[in-house]
Amino acid sequence: LWRRPARFGPRAREPPRVRAMAATRRNGSREPNKDPISPAPTDGYEEDFSESDDFQSDDVSDDELNVTPKWRKRAPQLSLLWKRPPGTIRSAISNRRRAIGSTGKKALRMAVTGDKSGVTRVRDFVKLPRAVQTIDKVSFTLGVVGLLVTQFVATEFPEFFHLYYLATAPGIFAYRAYQYYSIKYHYFLIDFCYYANAFHFFQILGGNTFWNIRGGNTSGEYGTAFGVAIFKMTFAYANGPILWAIPLWRNSLVFHSHDKVQSVYIHVMPALLTWCARWYGQADVLEAVPKIFAGDDDWLAKSTSSAKSSFEAFSAPVDAQTSVAQFLVYPTIGYLAWQIGYLLKTELVDVTRLDEDPELVTSLRWLAGDYKAGVTKFALRFSRRLGLFAKDELFDATSLKTKFVFVTLQLVYTVVTFLPIPLCYGNKTIHTSLMLLTFLSCIWNGAEYYIDVFSKRYAKKFEDGSFAKCSVRDEDTADALVKEHGEGAHGEANGDTSARVTSKETSKETSTRVKKRR
Image 1 (cartoon, one colour):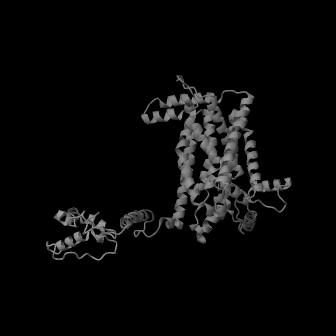
Image 2 (image 1 turned 45 degrees about the horizontal axis):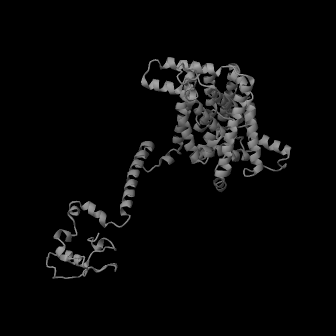
Image 3 (image 1 turned 135 degrees about the vertical axis):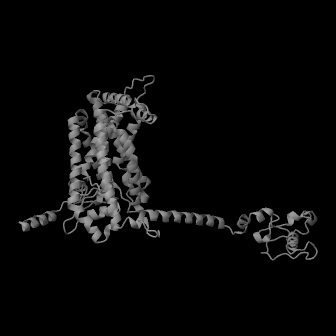
């Protein structure tokens, strides 16, 4: 640092005599007295060390006087780094990263859009009519194929259906989280239906490994009473509030809409999962999967044995008191734990964030503002009869009364749906019939959506240029608008965006056309 030239920085502390001798050497003269001391002009931040006892010019060698070291001559690119002002290296690195990123971005655009210039952005390309139609076709195909694969696994390998659930659910939930975060729907991801699905993961991964404290027992007998109680809690969640939410929130099986298909998946799969486990057993995951990857030929027989053991454990008779505790008390306690955590999250931890951003959507905000929903109508009518609300008063998502009404209503709904669970658990016919009825309502809602809403709105969005609005939030807004020609739609709760149209004008127009034809 003492011998760095002054031109490399305003704070160089090199003696003037050294700079003078270096200057003479650069000029081709080695006579130190030819131009004794003629220091280069500096910024005034220098000290004169020529009279210092610590410095003797005679002790300085020729190599030390050479201000251009050999490594700089041999590596001129590195020497340039010393001449750059502060921040130049960092900006050069960032520019290089941008160049690499722009090259990769251009290649991606060329591959996706087909534009050789790479100017057309992917986000703009997917909003073009042809791209939107292609995406919808792909979504429709995947939805139908997914339904067929689910049916095949449930009917041919019911004891391994939970493995199929573990393989498909993470990807669907991850994509839904990404999608909902982009449109500020992510508070739907902490609703009870997602809590129940997470509880299913907890039960499956535990199975007869964590719950079964066997010690030295290797007979394959399923679990302890705690493991069976955990399964019955998941059974109550799946076939109670989650399954009944399909007709209540009008989930629609609309194959071209990946959002609606995901909503159906979230509410249907837990019921189908518990149906397979209850009536055909559940193979041990931590026992079956390693044997499958290890190529063990006996994995199927051993897994079938563990599934049979779990079926026997699930079918073991219990007294009435234990049955009430397993199907009503324990699930209610689990629900209350979720409800407390939900209120702490939305009313304490994130209350400032929710107040500052009115575009963030929660279940309460959605229901309190959707007066076409049957649940909201019933809650408002019942609250007015009890005197909680005036005759002309509406719900306010920020008021304590509104929060109390919906929290209480959801608690009552959850407990009521728990009541028929013992019948479903004890009788396969009742259980299957309940599931088929809810699935049928889901299919019927999808048929209504296709005939009454989609057949008109899908063609119209390409005519008026609204196809660019292809996000879930924009589709919800479009479905919710009641138009003059009879379109109508129903909103969602718990993250579901299934739509329903009940149009009297449409039926009148249809009947008029039929009469004219006659």
